[in-house]
Image 1 (tube, rainbow, N blue to C red):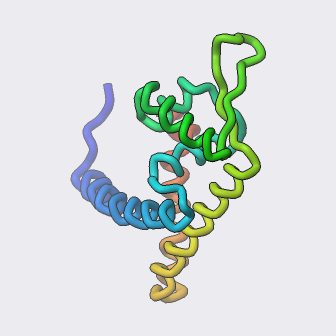
Image 2 (image 1 turned 90 degrees about the vertical axis):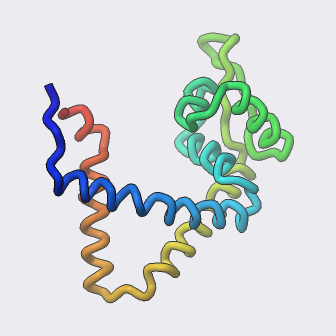
Length: 151
């Protein structure tokens, strides 16, 4: 049986939840400045960052329907950003992979997002930046797959 979160834990969670829309707004602008058009398209390219992925797994990770994924992949493929390839073990399965141009677009998006975030953080003092870096390291640790497995 899981325990109920404390008031302090809920307050911290609510604070984190309030930051998500702020980051989302930055990411939307970064996707537009990198000429990806939408955050959804950037998210799909990011999902392929570590290598080809089955279409179904990609749809699940992006939290979109397989039909929506198919439409987006078709558009990205027509722009030369991704390619579809048959799975070697199961010819019926389709994997999606970044093309060299898709990888360049993803890098432009990531750079635009990093620059936008860095510009926002520029007003913080060195001590504030260090505290934020430590806090995000803690968040990263708390949300890592290893932490989830330990629960």
